[in-house]
Structures are given as structure tokens and as C-alpha cells.
Image 1 (cartoon, rainbow, N blue to C red):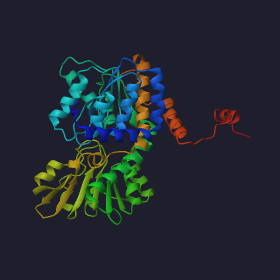
Image 2 (cartoon, helix red, strand yellow):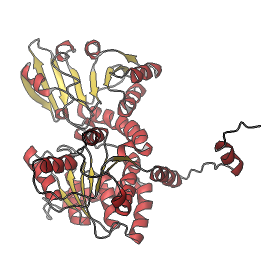
Image 3 (cartoon, helix red, strand yellow):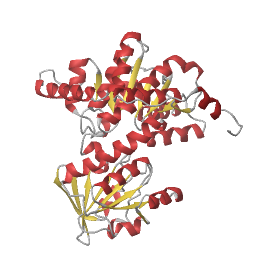
Length: 420
């Protein structure tokens, strides 16, 4: 909403980039074509707090095609692509409230701008819309509750399940992150590739021969570990979960506590969804010129306040690289202010993988519009029918066919009797 119509170069660049993304998201395209005809979201207002990227533009245009008034604000101050936002506003008529590197006050003003329009459905990436509504309700403020929401991330789902566990969730939420066609692909392949992409773009550092420490071996951590190893890195994994630690060992990685890894690592990547996993006890142990970055949703995984307190100086040595010098004269380089390195320092996930995630978002919005009256105040997984449909659409777009069970095979699988 803050983009000057006279800034033609920004607008033109954004439109070209959106068109490029649209061509690489065929599953979403199939949904959009159906939505244009059926208008399943006609008359609804949808508020989306997502990373304002070209891939998000494709989702916004799909929701608009379905008949919805779509408003978008940023889920991270450093991930907004201003050219994409400008084109969305000026070329496509999507209402956008986001500016790259906006301060905290502006960030929440933009969230307010979306919520003031009283959306029937909200889409979250980190649960900021949902948590803002819940905080206001807890303070006794008059708030209009959406019919339901969707949540894109592991971090957001954790927050929402905590609300549900305390009996405080005020309306239903569909956990997009828990769809197989989301976390198995977006988290593993998308985060894996884009995290390394962000590190390389920011530093231009050779990955081969370095020691990369992966903190957290969930789907995102698995993806980053595989990509780093594929580029020739020696990978160390740090975990608090015995099963995931065992899995990392079986996958061929070294596993050790962070304090031990701190002495060995050249590049450290946090991917846990938790707070202060790299903190004051770890920084003094690191090598001179160690690189630290975060690929979890919020900028809390690295204890930046502690790092600053124990440093004798801090300076920006390159865009998105801050050098902290400790009393020992060791230098530690923090990428992207500790925010999502794949979005702060690069362009985020490739369109091909976001095609799956945003197909889930679009179909889940349709599901909410049809079924919201039946839903309880709970966090739901994406219905299996939607998950399978997204996979089917993607395979169809790729020109890939698979087998079908015969009647005999279906009968066998549904029987308790042993085959003969």
C-alpha cells in the first residue's frame, strides 16, 4: 500500500518476477483455474501474514481468483520483496501492508491494518495474526474472531498447540505445516537449499571442506544437513531428542553437544524453533571468524543480546553481515541479524516447492469456507484428501503417472486373513 505508482522500474521488475514464479507453480495454477470458474471464496475477506515474496504473490492471486478480497502483511521484516509488493498493489489489485526492513512499530501497524478489515479467514506464517488476536482478547478488548485460520510453520504450530493445550484457542486452525506435501518437501528440500543459498549469497564462502554445525535435526535440519554435505561440508548435528540424534548418526553425520561442536564449527545454523540454542556459553568456544545464522522462524534462536554484551565492538562488514569482536579478539559473524537467513539473505524457497505448500493453503481456505461451522476450537491437520490431491496435481503437472491398486489388491489390504 506504500508503493508509489510512479516507480515504474520497481513495479516492472516485480511483475516479471511474479510471472516467472507463476510459471513454476503448476499445481497452484490448476487450482487457480478451477477457482476462477467456481469462486468458492466469493465475498470473503482473507488476511494473510506471510513472507511477501513472488511465491506468496501466486497464492494471493489464487485466492483473489476464488473471489476473495485478499490483504497481505509481512511475517518477517527482512523477507519482503519491495518489487513484488509494488507489483501486487499496482498491477494485481492486492492490498499489501509491508516494506522491507520495516521497524517493529511499523510491522505491527501493518498487522493491525489487516485485522481492522475483519477477515473471515486468516493465514499465518509464525502465528502473529492469531497471537495478536488472542492477546487482545485476553486484555478484554473487543475483537472480531475469524472463522478459522491456517498456519504455515513448525514454529507457529507449536505456539497454537500450546494455546489449545491451555484451553485458550479461540477458533479453529489448520496446520499446513503438518501436511506431508508441506513438511516432507518444503521443510526438507526448500529450507535445505534456500538456507545454504542465503549463507553463500551473504558470504560467498566455499562450503566444501568447512565444518557446518546443524542445530536441530527436524525436517528443516535434515534438509540443511544433506545440502551442506552434498556441497562437500563436514556436518555435525546437535540434538536434544535421542531418536533424532540416532537418526543423524544413521544418516552418516557426527552428533555431539553444542559445547563440543562450538570448538569445531566454521558455520553454525540453528533450526529448532526454540530460544537461545546458541548463547553466551558457546560464543567464547568458537573459532575466530566463525559464521552463525538462523533458519528458524523467529530471531530468538541465537542469543544476540548476550553476544552483544560480551563483545567489545560490533560493526557491519558487509550488507547483512555483522562482525562481533569478543574480548579474546575472536570475531564472530552474524548473518541477517539472526533472522531467517534463507529470506533475509536470499529469496527463500524455490517456487517449485512452495507450489505444494501454497496449494495446501488455497485448498484449506476452500475447506474452511465450506466446513467452518463444523470445526471445533482445535488445531487440525490438513485433511488427507487435500494432501493427496496436492500430490496428485503436482505429479500430473510433471507428466508423471503412477500405478493403481487392482480390486484384488484392495480386498487383500483390507482383509485380516493371510493370503494364499
